[in-house]
Length: 360
Ligand SMILES: NC(=O)c1ccc[n+]([C@@H]2O[C@H](COP(=O)([O-])OP(=O)(O)OC[C@H]3O[C@@H](n4cnc5c(N)ncnc54)[C@H](OP(=O)(O)O)[C@@H]3O)[C@@H](O)[C@H]2O)c1
Image 1 (spheres, rainbow, N blue to C red):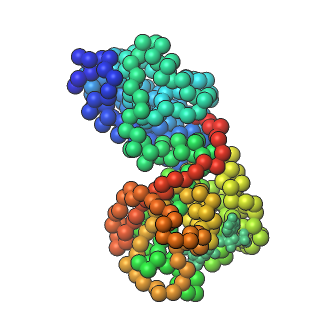
Image 2: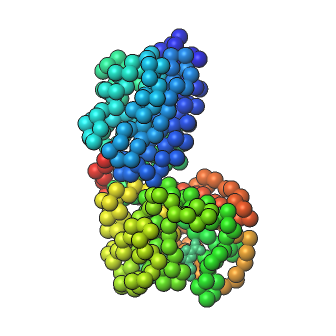
Image 3: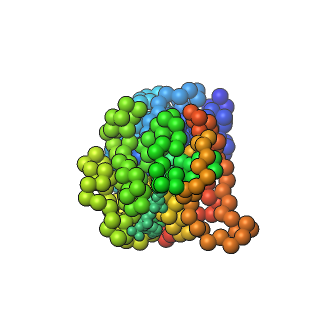
């Protein structure tokens, strides 16, 4: 381990970067539980560089990740390094400043991924340095962007929740047969994967068309069909009040909002409700509306080895006149799940809706 010999170096070493990757995994596992706060992970290395503690930010009102990790580390933290996916906060919110706890624990060095963009919580790096603690910031930016805390950062920048659009289609790009039926295009393992995706997000969004055709429940269930303890909010875009009173999305298994307003206003309402990362599961009409409004950030497509030849395709008209103006995405991941392929890609230039006021 290099850092005891060179405590003031400006770069993170391999052990610290590895710890930061661990922080991202810890934060990803907490996604969906912390909003409106960020899903942060923190890890403590002792003076010899050994991992002695770790933890995630707890649900709102609970301790931040740094505090959880330091409690676990106890006195082993003295002279050690705290690694965190986000800049430790320096403000009194529902909990005290993490910077105070870090200094009191005897930490001498802090390495973190991204700066906190929230003006109220920011200033952690400066507060730590003013106490003589070494600080290394802005590490692993690409990996941060792809993580749950990266989605929270995007939401804070955009002033609306980060939007993942998910669909399941046949190899010829159909999301339903000509009669509108779409159960089940993909295999059981792919459907289980969707439940894991939902579990890490704050809300599930559909249009009235999907509710009227499929009557989905849109809850998180395990493979035995048991409901998860925490359920994302179901948010139905329904301008003409067509969602029936007995639709499954209106049952008591999860909170539901039926929204009769505008798309962007709907996203603002979700942001105000505390949602920072949401899953768009609507049909081709709503998906097209979101894409036209620059309100899709990530796409997760499940491609089944089946052909239909007729029926709705994944997305409606995007009013793109020629191939030169195609919406381009960057591929993040391709994985075989059961008999289906899951493709994850990010939009190159999702644009902010408005400047945000965020809360950590
Ligand atoms: N395989 C899949 O992944 C998948 C997923 C979902 C659906 N589907 C299939 O897709 C079909 C339904 O397609 P769909 O396009 O009708 O469903 P949809 O996109 O979920 O719903 C469309 C409806 O949303 C409402 N809406 C509210 N605000 C809107 C806005 N700002 N812009 C556009 N629409 C808005 C509109 O009705 P109002 O004008 O009344 O508001 C519109 O008719 C079904 O066959 C279903 O099985 C497949």
